[in-house]
Length: 198
Image (cartoon, helix red, strand yellow):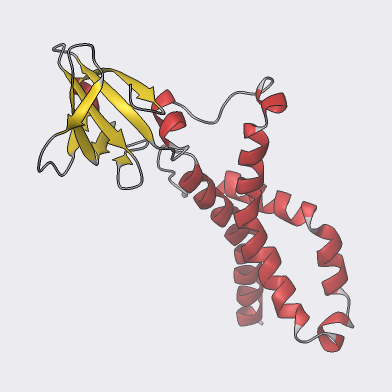
């Protein structure tokens, strides 16, 4: 009897922990945030799981009927995996797209904590001019092979191409034999972004 109760408790724990854990991990992959100590965020995980089950309660009711597992032995495990593993991945994606909606964005606080993360999360290509604190300027291309750090890591950026700037700050030509440059954020005063070479 004790073994049965222990198995039921473990199953109950997994059901109310796994979906929330997956949702939070997915959100952290989409939005740069401080690393979460799940031992201290247990309640938050349960809340995410509860939301998942509330939103999918209609499907849970259907597959929980006595006849469904016997009548649909192939669909039952598929729907179970969908509820426990698949949809918890999509909720953060859906929520992020809601945040990005211009009409809604006017009335809510952005989930991005820093402009650095907001800009580079778009994964767009830019021609960049970096202004250093010592008044030096470096031009370069931020594109598919470039990289920018995200929170909670310190700001750093890798530009795949470094360009020589002319006297007016325009892009003149790429630095010969350059394989890019890594720039530490604490040395940067400002960054200019261009969609085309200036």
